[in-house]
Length: 210
Length: 270
Picture (cartoon, rainbow over the protein chains, first blue to last red):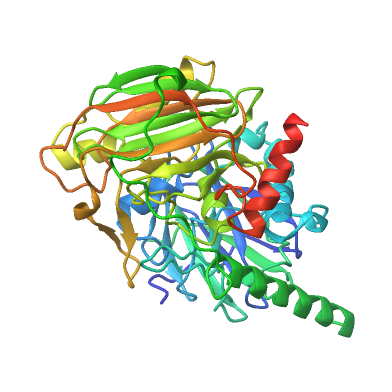
């Protein structure tokens, strides 16, 4: 399902299981996120590098495309209605942006108070965002790459087993300079990571030569 | 994975399937029937304030724990987008993602709750004639109204920004919103569907505050409402004293998750 040949990556990094990562992606550059071992949810947020008050908006993204899931061609829209990036390749095919990220607090509600003291995506996001002067206020509903959350016509909303195979990837090409923030999801209480969080790889490529 | 890790993973999967059964499947506790449109009268003495919000406009309402906001779609053509923050710590706010994820459903209706981002209950839906509300697609924006009507009109994005500014907040503080009387569903291919037949004049919801709140309601056409020109009508909002919850209160007892969310909420006031 790749629709363009990317030049060799100028940056490659393995994000360990359960850890955050962030990087500036310049306009025209492409970030490839690789689910190295399969069935690993990758929580992601985007901020306009020049004015981080402008950030990814899940609701605006879904409303503009008229459908509930993220896939090839999805434009990632900001809270000011601008396209921040778009999905230019996708070998998995199913990504969520309605289920948010896990937090210690929501884990305690969902799975019992004994799960409160488990590492969670919001902990990752808060720590990573602090590098840019941002706080919990700046965390909004995120993208969940490789996370399978079907919503049925009656509204049933369920995190089910991921379908991504080892090596599946998604490419996001930036339409503006963005701060791209990832939490390699530590959740062990639902099937989003196959109950076993694993590493992912990120690669940044410059625009293809004309 | 080691054998021990495998056992933990299997135990976690079993717990997940048990919770799913309680949230969607065989052991799901039935939700209450919708409120009748001529039901649930509010005693005169319980009304704290009443306001009409014209089409395109917004209102900011402060609720104390135990008070409720009734929102009435007077003509059956309005949609009402809502955000809210906890009065004492406004970094705590509505979280639509947690609301649908924790309750295993994007279909919020009577007996459900709306959660904050801190694992607590912001609002309980204690009365609801409609059951047709949207937490996925958000409110209208300058761009959505320009695309729909040929020129930007008053919209929810700008209303939220104006309301936030008046309580000392800004763009960073505006989370995804819930929209009442917005009958959006998701078809088998993932596309949003507008079920206009589910809107009726006089539809209302009663939202009981479970913590002290600053709420903003925006009376703007939902961006997926196909009406051209925009459907618009007034809404009525009534701040009132809600009946005290009984031990078998439907919202407080709907699911193991709801029970825990209320336990954590009640600790704020213990």
